[in-house]
Image (cartoon, rainbow over all chains, first blue to last red; front, side, top):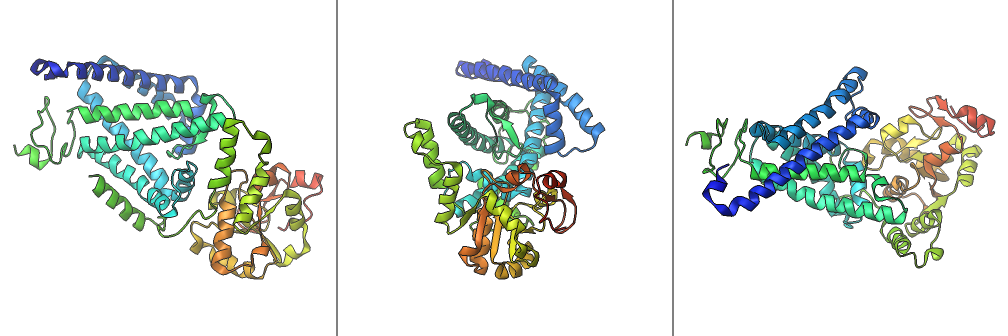
Length: 252
Length: 207
């Protein structure tokens, strides 16, 4: 990164980026280790939510996926092979949003009920708009990220989705914890994110990871395997060996 | 990009076979006022003694929408009512296809109100002739039964005094050891029968 050399004003941003990267790496390691320590919960998720019914395949996923998360966390933490790490982050985020979006899009009726439980929207028409558009919008963003089209704009959209959603889920969890009453981290409910019932603390960690990944994509310039990194801006400083296939950029 | 994404999202919803009809009120049984009021009361703890039980609250909410609550005793009476044999008393399961196939009250019809066109032909005739119609879903926070009751009552004009909502729902039915039919309606595949027979509750089960 040559920004520190060119201007000293960027230095605090670099420090913030470094801290965010460490946090992201740490959270990935935490998520991986928690799955290693509680394989039965992860197996349930794989079989019921991801609908992997084959016992051998589900066991293989349960045995390998958590360690891949730990490895990825170490990769992010170390700062080694950063371009590859950005590429994996983009694909991981894309897969998560495509899966969760499709899960909701194929069951919009259930999603509608879950949105209603937040008591945020009273008009049936507005509720329908959310139930109809939000799942497919997530799929759309996921596909753009997977293909590497308008990466920053897509990341910005995801941040705009994740921040209010996380706050709404947090508010609902606080409400449940106060009314039951029960410890905050024991609160478990279907937040409508597409992964079924989840413990709130785990959900908040997951959303923080997703948010940091989206922020990373927003600020990074890794263009590996991007079809068209930016739709409008043509003067992005390129990294080493960019694989940019967008006609507008490759013709420069 | 957000605008393009939103436009594409609405287009995908329009072309999806499970897409939502934007003009329709899919959740007519509004859950807003009573539930929020009680929750806020509980949060402050100030007037906790004045709050009603969940069933009383549900009954009040149902009354607001012109519906009647049926408790477990009433539902068992309906289930053993001889008129059930000739569809004078009917049960309607308001849950989705998967839940219905996993287990429903024996002989219950199926009506999932999000996609009424798929179910109306099977239930319109019997609903117009039945003297008592009991809607149910899983119970608890589930509002599907009330939503289905309102949708069906308003769309085909069932007199409101014939419509009941079983508040305890399938969860209470199962807990009470009553018989459950698996698969299609009148499949004859009954579970819970041993428990129900021991409790003398299987007599009315119709295979």
